Length: 300
Image (cartoon, rainbow, N blue to C red; front, side):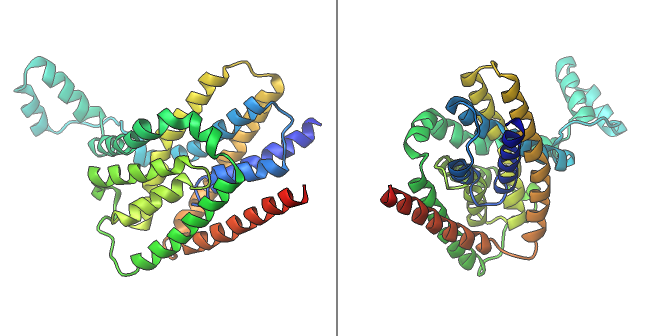
């Protein structure tokens, strides 16, 4: 039985790793997969697992983009800068010397932009998280959101053909654009929407290139998903059985490996193609989901 359960976990990890980064809704897919593949665990643990498995996906971003994200280093301070620092009072001199020697200013600015983009979700979405989970986590909402955002991707990409991006590098991304992308991220609390899908749409509409929109989406996921996992962990507690612990570890590891491959694929794909194929996929999947569950209800 444990072997069968592990096969189910591996499949869930594969689905999470692929759908977390492709703009096709990981939560929506996980809800749908759960309809056909039931882990032999409690409902409370399953809700916890579906959130915490995302940690593997986030670790993939951290590993792949470590050089772009890690804001510390050790470097020798230029003599001119040293002379300027000596003129400062003791406390400011200490702080500024530390910053010059150990801190990468550009990466700190990037992290501040990420935090600014997280504010709308913290302020607007987080207080209503429990209500959203109870009211919207069902196949009707997932199917409708899959179709709606599929149409949006196609329409926005057609509109975007007539525009040139004003932001083609991450260091060109303004705090205003980061905030706009963060506002679009709030929409992703509705299952079936896709966090990466909503933020990529926000980035494209705000004038970023597809590459910048995708990369900033990856980075934006780090505090959001770590926060969501921590919140679930606090609610669930640390009382895992040995089987539950194995399920968590396997799910996270599989999610990590598949996420690495999915991210590399997406970044290579969007250099030559747009997002319309994902829009069509969402529309077809949404129609199939509605058809399946309506048929199931009628037959019942």
